[in-house]
Each structure stands twice: as C-alpha cells, then as structure tokens.
Image: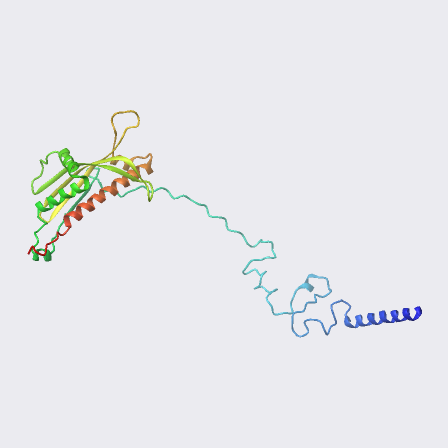
Length: 286
C-alpha cells in the first residue's frame, strides 16, 4: 500500500514539473515567447539579458517616457532624475523699506517765505433768483455781513469779537469792507482713523476784504502754541515755517502741518459755503 502511494506521489510531482516547463518555455520565468508582452506592438517589458546599459533603454514604444520631450528632457520641464541639478530655486527678493516722504501740501509764498492761504472768490447771483425778487447778496456789504455771521457760528459771538479786537483797526482798507482778526483755535492732531489728540492751539492772522461780486481771504503768520512742560511760565511758541524745514522729528512735524492744513481748509470751505448760499425766498414775498 505504501509503495502504491509513493508511486502516485512521484508521478504527480513529475507531471507538475512538466506542466510548469510548458508554461515557461523561455527559461526566464516571465512566460513564453507567444505570451510575452510586445508582440502586438504594445509596450515590451522584457529588458533583455545583455546586462549592458543599452539593453535597458526603451526603443520599442511610441510613448513619451524615454524621448527628449518628456520628464527627463533637456529642453523643458524639471529633470527629476538629476537630483535637481538643472533647477535653481529663485532667492527671496530683498524687502527694501521706502524712504519717508514729507508732507508738501502747505501753500508756501516764496516771496514772503510764509505759509499763506490766499484766494479771490467770485460770488455770482443766479438770474432766476433776481427775477423772483430776491435781493442781490453779492454786493460788498452783504458779503461782509455773511462773513461776520460765519465767524460767530464758527467761533462763537464773544470769541469772534475778541479775535477782531485783537487784530486792531484796519488802517489800510481803501475800498469796501474789511475784517481783520487774530484767530485762536484748538489744534487737533489725527493719530489714526478714529483717534485725535490735543496739540495745543493754532494762531494766525486772518484778513477778509470784500468788493461787489467778490472777496479775498488771506491767512498767514501761523503759530503753534503749546503749554511749557519744562517748568517755565511762558508757553512754547513755534512758527509753522520751522516745521517745514526742520531736520529732526520729521514725522512729528508733519503731523502738526497736516493738522493745521486740514483745519484751515475746513474754515475756508465754511466761509465759501456761507457767502455763496442762496437765500430762501418766501412765497408771500413777491
């Protein structure tokens, strides 16, 4: 019985060996020549057995893996097989701080070497207003009265009178009416978009001259006055022209100049709006 079992086992093993050799008749373990990939024009995976570098080069397919236009070409793209020798990473650009630009918005009179705001403004009454029976408000006395009203609303009646008295009598006025005043107002420095800070007071000479259909304003001799913090009784007085030319604390000086320019321009806008406003005509006044 044992001999029969051993004989059957030997025959089975011999048959398996013969079948295996018929499946791999090339002896390389990858399959027969008829079953080998590449006989129908597809990619041939058999690299050969020559053992030289040329035997490992794919020349049988039409794909782009081994040509000069693929991943490892010399004409374009990154060469992933060259350990990055053909690609040089660009260096980070150096961050260069822009130089600070000084504020240059102050109107400067080169003749007098003073910061001076001056303009002649025309006031034209619409014909329609006169046709409806309105009074001509472009005559000099009407413009003068409007300017007085603007000062009283802007600074207060008492303060406006004190400013006019402080300027003294106008001895040079030859034609029309003239308002001279020494204006004193708080100076507010804008620290950021939402915050301001008190920076003392701004003082300057204001002159308004009126003629029919026009007037001239002139603001000059600007002074920045701050309380003294060194124990002195006198306040610290600085002319605005100093801030224009000072070489130290440039940013701080520009803050004062910008604050001055902003507030004076607001005054000018208010004066122009008051003098150019068309009075209301009552329907019963015709």
